[in-house]
Image 1: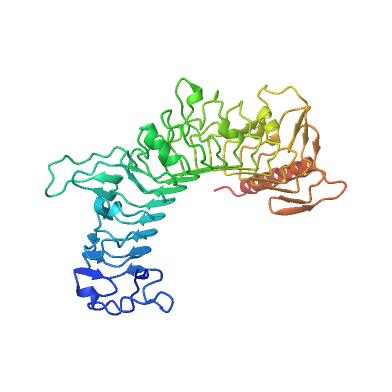
Image 2 (image 1 turned 30 degrees about the vertical axis):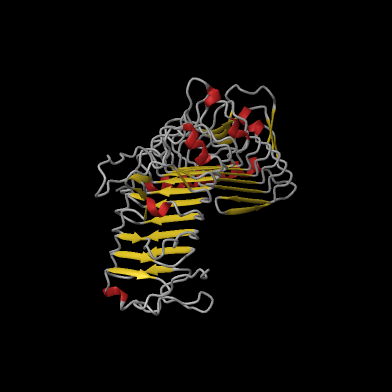
Length: 478
């Protein structure tokens, strides 16, 4: 059996005049295109990169390859699996295609059926790409990418579907009208990471549960960015994401992240989610979760970051328990007035880092809404606290006659919180506090140090500066 090779280019000057090109080890037309991968230094890249070959419209690969990278082939319209190299893609593990603006798809169904070893596919910045795999003729069988575990699709404005039936010259069959990015024609039972951005489909998954389940059963990471037509990510018909651990959503038009029908047992929520990042979701409705939701996924959440979600008025359900949350960060959410309630604070037993910034209407971090009768709130593991540019903040906790205990707190930073009068109105303990930065001034911990007193002094100084400025202005009328 011939040893698997990779494609290398030292000089593309002769190739730039060709419109149809075929590469294999025996090709006399391109004697400098093939080199032993152990002794080659390529001009245009490494590991089988084909890039910057102007004028190439059709590309045939006749040799067995494991890695195929197509970059900046602006005239490339078609990739063929030549009859001589019928087994070209039997060992193909990785496909990377970028800036090939005339490509409408990468492979046809005749090629797809031999992609048995495909593990990763990344396609980006191809402005005319309509589907990744095109099925022609009478192709009706489900295509199983059994080893595919990473899929990345980015900036493909005309992409309709991952795998779609297309009309061929000799076929009278109707073409597909895709309703989702992934449909019943393709399954990938070992998919672990899915990253999509800049795609204008309305749905990611179809609603046929048996096929859908086989696509997402091992999915651990999902990132969706700038896909403005997707209104709903998880619905009551797609409640099967048993292993999803990381979810990142950015630049979308979601009205709600997690929804469910009348039966909460069918809640469309990943069961083991650990990391949730929400960024620039301007259309996100008032709540991420229904306020009476009983979501098991919250129990596993470790890292929650929310930013630029200006319509959001409630960060978490009042009855939620975040017993594994270690990091909570909230930035640029101007409709929020509080971060958590007293009862929710009790569940944050593992919280290590809390950062809040640039939220103009937050008045306090921990609010008393009549949900707790105890006289003590303890953040037992909180080490780092950052409060920045919160012009409406008056205190961290305004509840009177309550003890706030922060036994592990080591670092505090407070900046541009002009209306913060005091840290906590009840008793406060911070025995491990060592580093305090208030409006760019460091305060050394000493036996007499008190965080409440420092905040009060900061507030008095700011008010004094403000008054002085106003008095100065009164002596200089326009």
